[in-house]
Structures are given as C-alpha cells and as structure tokens.
Length: 90
Image (tube, rainbow, N blue to C red; front, side, top):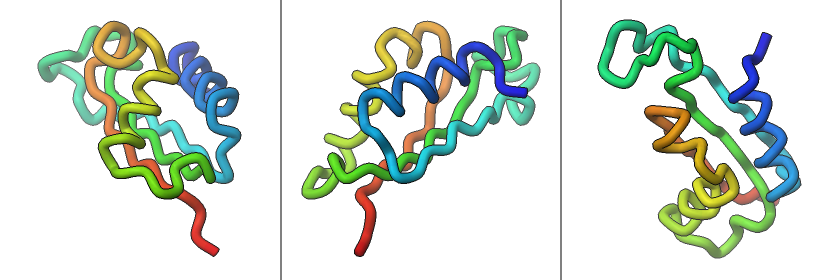
C-alpha cells in the first residue's frame, strides 16, 4: 500500500501533467540503513512519467518540470528522486 508521500507525488504529477503513464516507485527498502534513510520508508523514489507536455523538451527541462510540480518533496521530504520523463511516441 502506498504511503502518504507516494500518494501525494502521484496526485501532484497527475494534476500537473495528465500523464499517459505514471509510476511512482518506492525504492526506500533498497536503501535501508544508508545515508538519507530517515526510517519513514519513504526516502527514495523513482518516477517514470510519460506526458505530451514533455515533447520537444530536453531531459534537463523535463526533470526540472517534475521537480517543480513536486514542490518541497524532493530534497526536503524525500532524500533521493530518480526521474525518467518522456513524451509519448506515436
């Protein structure tokens, strides 16, 4: 069952981008006891998102857009966030 941070990330990304594909993967268990593990079980995530708005945007622009949509979550409430953002292919 997704935790509250994961649910919030899914909601924010859905509202911001209306994605055709969205996966918010909790990787925290792989990092238990490592630096940045706060014991919450929600410290490390991977976001896989596909949305038309990412067309003609660089990888860096896409990552910045995702980070902006997530507000204070990256770096404040989540220690590590891997982002795979793409546009749908026809």
